[in-house]
Length: 108
Image (cartoon, rainbow, N blue to C red; front, side, top):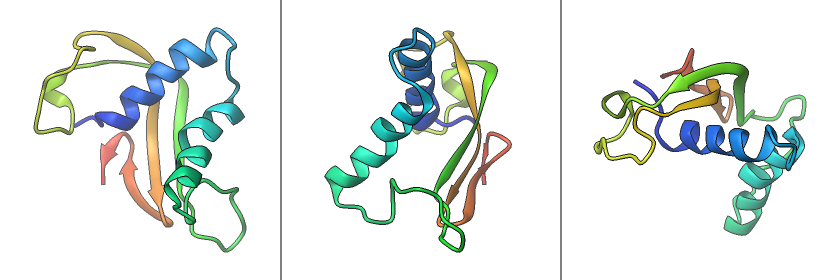
């Protein structure tokens, strides 16, 4: 089952901002992690990786592509404006406080 929000948001940003050169990877991390954490006052998010710190990271495959299949999204709703659309970039793994939340593209 695929992710709805993070995967779709990331792929849209990759297609509209990274590929045309409007943002680099550091800019994406800033806009999708650092700034939202700062605005929300979440001190455990949006900081650099440090030895011994609990990791909150997303591992992506920028060369992979995926197609939005509403029935396969991890959501109670299958309503999406992106149905049948192909996007670049696949989120392979996510870790929250050092624990896997997505492994191999599947919710852990």
